[in-house]
Image 1 (tube, rainbow, N blue to C red):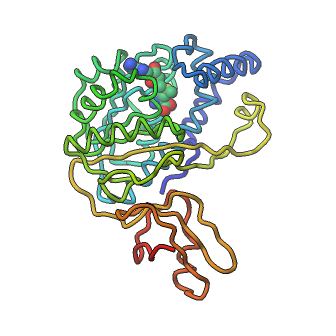
Image 2 (tube, rainbow, N blue to C red; image 1 turned 180 degrees about the vertical axis):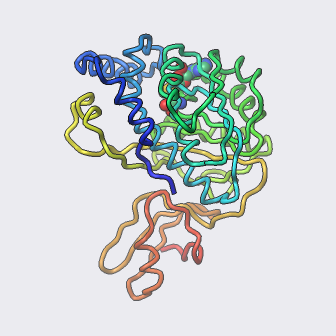
Length: 330
Ligand SMILES: C[S@@+](CC[C@H](N)C(=O)[O-])C[C@H]1O[C@@H](n2cnc3c(N)ncnc32)[C@H](O)[C@@H]1O
C-alpha cells in the first residue's frame, strides 16, 4: 500500500518555493485561509501566489494523505483496477492527481479542472519537474461547465471539493461526475458530520443511478449509523519543519480526519465488514466496532480464542475485514 507522506518530487518542488517566502506572511495567510474554511467559506480566500503556496504548505500533506488512504482502500477491494486516465475535479494544487499517480503506475493521462487561477498556476508549477505528472491537461473553469466538456476517465476524484459547491448544485455536479466515470468515482471530504452528510446524500443519489459502493461500506444498503455518530477515518502523517512553523505546531505528526466514498460501475467482490473505530484491546478481549450488511456490530474476540484474538489485534480503524468474516455480535 502507498505511504501517506508526500512523494519526494512534490516535497522537493514545495521546498524549492520556500526560498524567498516570508514564513510570517505565509503563516498569516494560512491562518486567514483556515479561518475562512472554519467559518464555512471556501477557497475564494486564495487569491495570490503566496496564498496558494501557503494553502499548499498547510493543507496539501493532509489532503494528500487522506486521498492516499482512500485509494489504498479502493485498491484493496478492487486489486485488478489499473486506471489509465484520471479526472481530478476541483483539483486545486493537484493533490489528488499526485496521490493517484503514486497509487496507480498504470495512469497515463491526467485531466484536472478548477475555477481558481492561482491554485491552477501552482499545480502546473509543482508538476513541472515531475516524472509522473507530465503534460497534465488542467482546465480552468467552473466545475459543471468544465466537466461537461471533459472526456470521461477511468478514475474520477473530487477531493475536499464538494463542500465548496452550493447544496442546490451538488446533485447536478454528482450526476455529471458519475457520467464522466468509466470505472471508479472517489469522493473525499473532511471527516466531520457535515462532510459525512454530504457524502451520504451523494451515495443515495448515485446508488439510485446504478453505482455500486466499493469502499468504505461493505454493502449498498442504507448507512446504519445514527446521529450523532458519523462514518469517518483518520490518517496520521509526518509533519515537516515548514508545516510546524506555519501552524505553530509542536507535534511531529498530524492526524487528518476524513470521510470518503468509492463507487464503481461494476459490482465488486464484497468484504464482510469495515472497522469503524480503533478497536479496544484489553488483556481479556479485543472489541471492534464493525459495519456489516447486518448493521453496526460490536464484535468481541476473547483472549481464549487465540486465533480470533490475534486477528483482532491486527485490526486498525478503517481496515476492511476479510479473514473469516465478522464474528458474532457481543
Ligand atoms: C479545498 S480545495 C481542495 C483542492 C484539492 N482537491 C485538494 O484536495 O487539495 C477545493 C477546490 O475546489 C475548487 N472549487 C470549488 N468550487 C468550484 C467550482 N464551482 N468549480 C471549480 N472548482 C471549484 C476550489 O477552487 C479549490 O481548488
